[in-house]
Length: 272
Image (cartoon, rainbow, N blue to C red; front, side, top):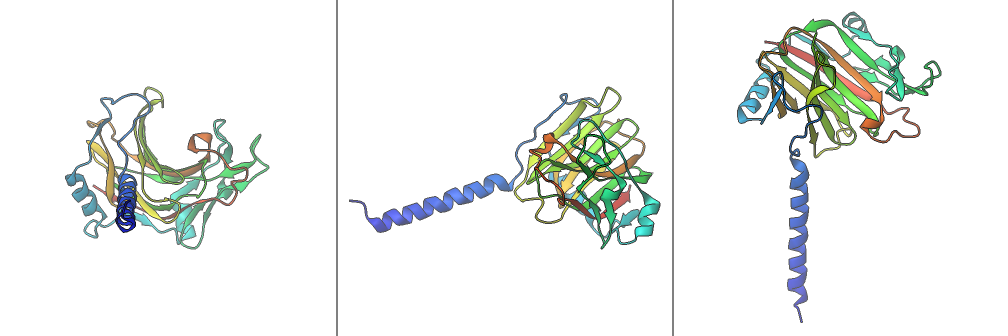
């Protein structure tokens, strides 16, 4: 007959090992996945390196003061620097209206509201674009995403030829990162999917990209999670955008998504 004490100890150790192994499995991002076309001349995925970590840490430090920064505390300054958008894409389950972008209390909130002013749509979400265009440099925003599936929480940039999706977050912990080429149609894309440990809606996180003449390095909370070599193709200047969208590609849309919002606490740009 087995010794119950030894059996209990073995079971306890086994349980600890299983829990630790499960925690480790979700602590690190999963391997990259791609959608759209394979690697292109204008965008080739590469592994993240220790050098990337050092570079991102350097740009996040006080040694690199921001060229432009906002904590959304000044409503008048917001109106000078940003434009609320109005649109109604047929592919989405909600339209976007200016009233869904609210600047108050030291934050910009992209609200999910009920609406009766959009044809065939019951809800509206928010979208805002920067008035100025910015070039090579480090971009970072502090964001708390909405706590529902079915809402695409997006921080992105648009150049003349490319769309740089720094973060498309789907509740609770999926981070999408994509470089789209518009010259061959938007379906030409190179991207990553990262499944992270944390519930990203539980708190604010920093999402950012270092855009240089040769590559893009994306990070969350200072940790690089993706790198794309661009071979000088992604050049010029970019408009910065924040948006939310109700869509089934972000997961099942709740029967009533109203009140589940994306909040942006700050944004900064450090020019190279």
